Image (tube, rainbow, N blue to C red; front, side, top):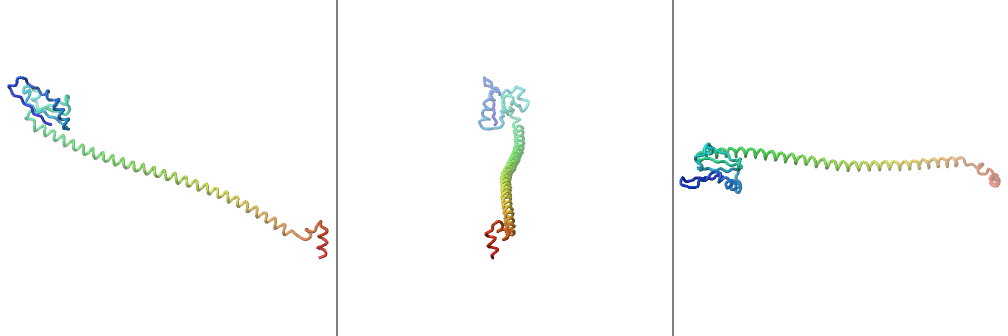
Length: 184
């Protein structure tokens, strides 16, 4: 934002440059301008303003006071500052985008890790349940084996008894049956 000020020699009350700083700063903010420059012929005998580009940012941020002969140089300086600023803004945007890419990448890795961990826990639980079922089946099969072994022993004993069965043994101590077999 540029504002020009001039004063006639006949004016009874002489204005000072500082009288315009507050309004110029307010206008700069209202219009969203980055810099404010007062191009002034006021206070013509003040050496402070006659030396060149005067930075008054100690009172108002990004504000300068110049004489008309420094108009082109300040435009050049502001243009160069803006170009540098654009370069830094572009670099900042690039870094922000890279940070966003890194953040998205990290989020994807975390999501993968969490999903993998969930699947691992689920698979591990199913694996443990399967092992428990195998152990239960082994125990049941062991019981079946024991029952079959016991049955085999019982059948073997029954077979031995059947093979050892004779008429003599059946009639021993039974005189009625012994006489009947003897008759036959």
